[in-house]
Length: 315
Length: 189
Image (tube, rainbow over all chains, first blue to last red; front, top):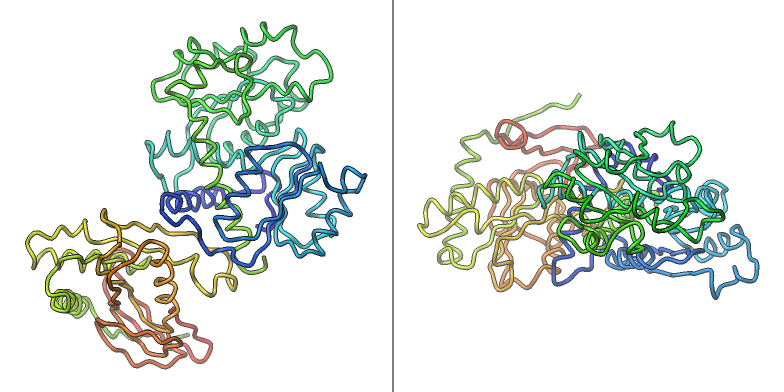
């Protein structure tokens, strides 16, 4: 594995390996000395063409904990705002000797272009491209689900997610997380159901390896986990639903709906949350919620991805 | 095809471990402060067996509370020369390693590079009062100034040969074999 561009790049074995390594990485983060020497002397560039808090900080922490040198580059305040192209930016990074580029870009496919165009020899990690994919988010979701639903709150080395039923609710159309999650969770053996209004489902969703439903209350029964997606108002160029109130009545997760789930079921959200729209504050802060833990798991999973891509030969 | 020559069988391995357990106790004047850390994979099982032997001789010693494992993968000096390897568990006994006598346990001592990595890994986990090294087989050919305190068997080998340790827990039986690979043989450290 040279790049991590899509959740579909990972076989079941590779995905399980990332989760297993992430378990060990998480273990090291309980220590007094959290730093590990695995990427000493490597340079990781965080290339962010789009706003991000969680993902950028998480990748930065992960790379630093592994002793890599980290250069963070955000489009604001760089020559990108003067009109520099992705290619020229890539050539600049190549000239600086980056071993890995973590890229977030508003255009779907930008990381793929960066990895395949021959502009750079660095490993490329997709940290979210347009409405396409966000593979490390899917990995951290899988990690969180494995810990709680397979490992009973602890490690579950070697295990996949076979037989787990996961619902993903909300703005699938604009969500890169949903696509990566469907692909990865399917690879790991889980059954995924997407729940959204027809206007917020992408063309071609029937070819995805999952089920689709328009009815949230009907879909909730028997799920082991439910994930709310953020309604991405900033990407909406048309009226996709009549009103926020109607949306949250039909597709918002609240305490009443969570009570329909089995006792062991957990609630995820990739963040940032629109409290009161796709999720109520009561649900987000309730006992089923693993939303805060998802963030800390993100660091361990990204450490694992960086380690597996960069620590070995040919990196 | 390389020949496989057995050099230690199960009873000899068992006797060697019993002797090492006694040596460790003697050297330490008792079991106080001892922590046995095995280096994955096989060192972990050896550390557990040693701990069980200590517990058998010294009442009041709980084998599970003094044995642990120490993964050195991220500290290896050849990390970049091979594909990235899966990490294995590092599990310290409840009291950690601070101010303890840590006995590192591995199956084969060869170049000494694994032990160097283990010392670095240990350094990030705390400050033991002393660190000692116990190995089942010392096959020579050191590349670093490292020696073992407790050795099951000194095994003179050619650098081209490979030493393979088989353990009940991982391989279904206990044995130490020498594999005579002409020239290209790169044994593990």
